[in-house]
Image 1 (tube, rainbow, N blue to C red):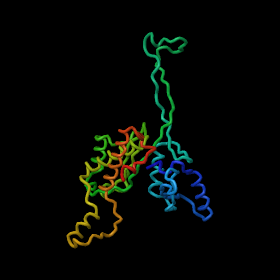
Image 2: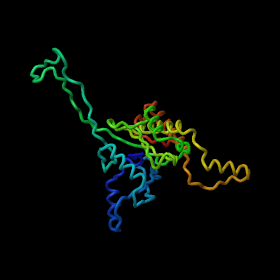
Image 3: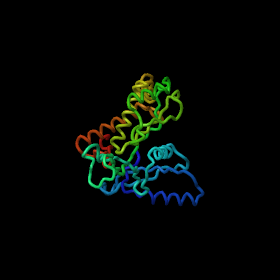
Image 4: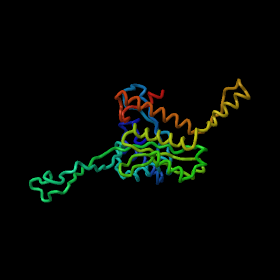
Length: 274
């Protein structure tokens, strides 16, 4: 998710400047991504959460690249202190004037002409990104067919409102790999867009395949029923990812029905998952 809400009072600008100064002294230049994890204060859970820095990547990561792509689509402004991202949204007010006597207002130099009033307002934008979705069924789909179905099922990105979903092509569809970026004003709508995009992908590619972990567990169960240990696998199954995202979406919908955290900005969904 962007922007992060786990550390609401984190001074991002100060943290980045301090890190940048240290890296500069050591001769490190270019793109840098730092990974943080947050956790409750063990002395007082009501305090602001604590955090650890767990990784430092001195190159252009996928998450840094997608943030640049997001900024390219939005053409907005990032608050470097709070991390909030806003865009200028120009909305047209009611048209003033019209035909006939109603348009003949006193002092009007051009009676009969419709006048419009533009109102500038700022709207927040957030996004959710799934960078690696592997499904073998995508390999048999042609580009033209896939994006034609996107249009028919209204899976698209609105360039005027700057909201919606966009698929990220890391390679050809024949590789069976896609990325998905969902953008909206609030986190609740963002995850709703992500869920709809993933459901659409399953409709086109078919049911998600079994994970390698499930296959190995079945094989070990058949060969050695008494052996329960299974080797660790660095394997991301799209079915597991989609299941987790659907659970998160249900958690947000449940809170919205209760009238709590309707935008999904202030309350964490983790309590609904545990």
